[in-house]
Structure formats: structure tokens, C-alpha cells
Amino acid sequence: MGKILVIGAGGVSSVAVHKMAQLIAAGSGPFSEIILASRTLSKCDAIAESVRQRTGVAISTAQIDADDVPALTALIEREKPVLVVNLALPYQDLPIMDACLATGTDYLDTANYEPRDEAKFEYKWQWDYQDRFKDAGIMALLGSGFDPGVTSVFTCWLKKHHFDRIDTLDILDCNGGDHGQHFATNFNPEINIREVTANSRHWENGEWVEGPPLTHKQTFDFEAVGPKNMYQMYHEEIESLKTHLPEIQRIRFWMTFGDAYLTHLEVLQNVGMTRIDPVMYEGREIIPLQFLKAVLPEPASLGETTKGNTNIGVIATGVKDGVQKTLYVKNICSHEAAFEETGNQGVSYTTGVPAMIGAAMMVSGEWRGQGVFNMEEFDPDPFMAMLNEHGLPWTLEELEGPLPF
Ligand code: NDP
Image (cartoon, rainbow, N blue to C red; front, side, top):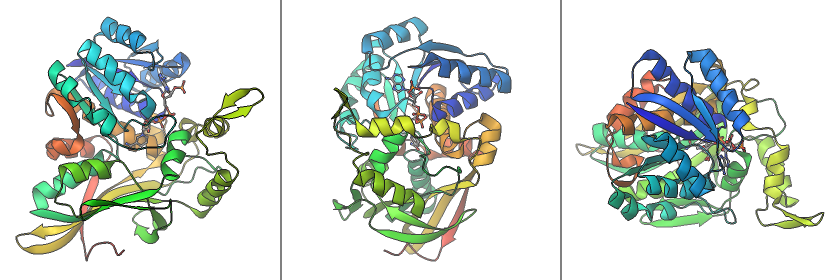
């Protein structure tokens, strides 16, 4: 049993905290207490109130700027959690890891570190903490969301139970939800737009293959959604999967986008609103993308209006007992059901539930180690079981062959 400190009070945090509180209310599971801290205290208090109403569990709240390592270190020393769950933004990964090192506390996040001034998605900054975490005898679990996160667990589970060797892997992320807005993103707009406007990149035959953003597309018929255009793009689990499962010859990531989303994005890019370098405005520097975020709907506010399903999974082709086969594991999540249960839409739900499960794996001791780890490095079975029990059930089917190119 352990006390958890959750940092950040957006949609993902709200779901993770509701799910942790459900376990506390049921008297099952490894969490004893939750403290929720973020930059804006009122958002923590609003989540705490919703958790109290829905589960009867009281959680405490605190104000913290997680970029301020001494202040965060003092908060961790005062509260003495067994684990810090970072559900703020990727910019906070390194300061929070520093505070965990200073206090000897375990760490978990859902997205890899990004420098503010460069849309560069790489694990190298966090993997550099490996020796320091090991020497301190503590553990960091990186990327315990859906993608990255569950997609890696799905891949390891397929490898463990159904393949001697995986040759190709496609990760398919479809959000078939409609939020009724002209343009909005389903998680933090700044992070989402940086990701979508980056060059596409996939792993093939031992090297990166790079191309312009959102150029290579194909149509896929997603169960519970229907046919959608999906676009190949870079996503961070490609880097950790090719590192930990080097047998896979080709790893690609696909995400669906509607035509209206892409048209808005193109206009915003063309007029310079997605720039991440500073521009002078009325005598002060502003970052256009940060200004854009301020005028777009908050992802956490989309829950009430979003209808439809998400459908995220992996398609792996490989060999078992000398026979080639293609298997597809996926989860379908209803936005309306996610909102009914936690007050948040499905994209926050599909990320917050695996964050809770990753925390449970660490605190219960099912997943243990000293150093910095990705999801592929642990036994997928207990994680897969908890997905089924806690709102993200998955299915397995055999396909006729791999995705065409
Ligand atoms: P939101 O923008 O809704 O929430 C982020 C929260 O972090 C806000 O409460 C914000 O505070 C807080 N925050 C920002 N900076 C600081 C700081 N310096 N100190 C303390 N708190 C801070 O984002 P989401 O909930 O949508 O996403 C959360 C994380 O989940 C992101 O890192 C995102 O990349 C990741 N994610 C991962 C996915 C996956 O599948 N792996 C999918 C979707 C998201 P304030 O309210 O004051 O701005």
C-alpha cells in the first residue's frame, strides 16, 4: 500500500485520479492515499470534489510549479509518497525526475520529454537518467499511457503468447469521436500540434525513414467507427520498441484525421500560428502556438459534447512454429461511457487508465527494477488483465495479412 503524488490537473490526471480512488473505495489495490498537485490549485480542487462525489474518497490537493525543482523536492519530502505520477506536460519530465532523484522516490509518466524550443521527440534525455536512478535504487516507468503505453504492452503480449518472432508492426490510433467544435484537440493542443506537424518517421531494416508530415495515408475500416483516412506519423514508442524488440524489421504509426481538422491545421500552419519560436507582440515575446492553445477549447472541456468511440490497436505480422500470421489486438473506448464514469472524454480516459495501471504495477511490486524503464521491459500479462478489469477491454483477431504499404 502506498501514497501517490499525482502532478498535473488536466483530463488525463482527472481520469487517473478517479480510477485510483475507485480502487481505494473498493478496498482493493495498492493505493492508500492520493495527493493531487498542479500549477492551478482550483483545477485540483475541482477534480478532488468530483472524486469525492463519485467515489466517496477524499484526496488532498496542493499548488506546485513542477518546473521549480526545490519547491517540488520540498513537497515530496513533506508528503513522502512512494511514487510520483507525472501527468503534467512533457516539459516537466526532467524537473520531476530531478526531484524524484533528490528524494529517492519512484517516477512514472505518459509522454517523453520535449524541449520547449524544439519539437524533438526522443527518449535520450530520460534514458540518460538510467545510471542515476539505478544508483539511487529507484525506478522510473516511462510512457504509461495508451500510445505510448498500452500499444507496447499489446506488442509484448503478442510476442509472449503468439509469436516466435515479430517481423512488422503497425500501430493504429483512431479517434472516431465528434466533439461538435470546428477545431479542437483531444489532448493538450500545444503538445498535440507539435506532434502532428513534425516530420513523419518510421523504422525499417535498421534505420529511420523520414518524410514530410502527414503525406502518406491509407483508408482503414475501424470497428465501431467505420472507414477513416489514417496518416503515417512519428510516435515515440517506435524508438523504444525498436530498441527493446530489435527483431522487428518495420514499425510504423498511423493516426486518423478528418479533412476539416487537416484543413484548419494547414491554414494555421500557413499563417504562422503553429510556430514555436518567439515573436514580438505589443512589446513582449510570445510563442504563437502557446497563444493558439489559449484560444482553443481546453481538452478537459470537450467531455460533455464528445460522442463516438476511439479504436487503438496494433497489427503484428510474424512467425509461430514456422507459420506466418498477422494478429490484431485493439481496444474500443466509448467517449460517452468515459464521460459518464469520470467526467472526461475518451482520449483522457484511454491515457489515464493505463497511467493508473502502471502505478499499480509499480506500487504492488509486479513491475520492479532499479533504473529507467519502458513498458516493453516487463511482463505484459498482469497489465493486460487490469486493462480488462478497469475499463479498457481488448480483443484479439487474426487478419489475412499485414497492412498494405
Ligand atoms: P492538459 O493540458 O489537459 O493538462 C496538463 C496539466 O499539467 C494542467 O493541469 C497544467 O496546469 C499542468 N501543468 C502544466 N505545467 C505545469 C507545471 N509547470 N507545474 C505543474 N503543473 C503543470 O493535458 P492532458 O491531461 O491532455 O495531458 C497530460 C499528459 O498526458 C501530457 O503530457 C500528454 O502529452 C500526455 N498524453 C499521453 C498520451 C498517451 O497515450 N501516452 C495521450 C494523451 C496525452 P494548468 O492547468 O495550470 O495549465
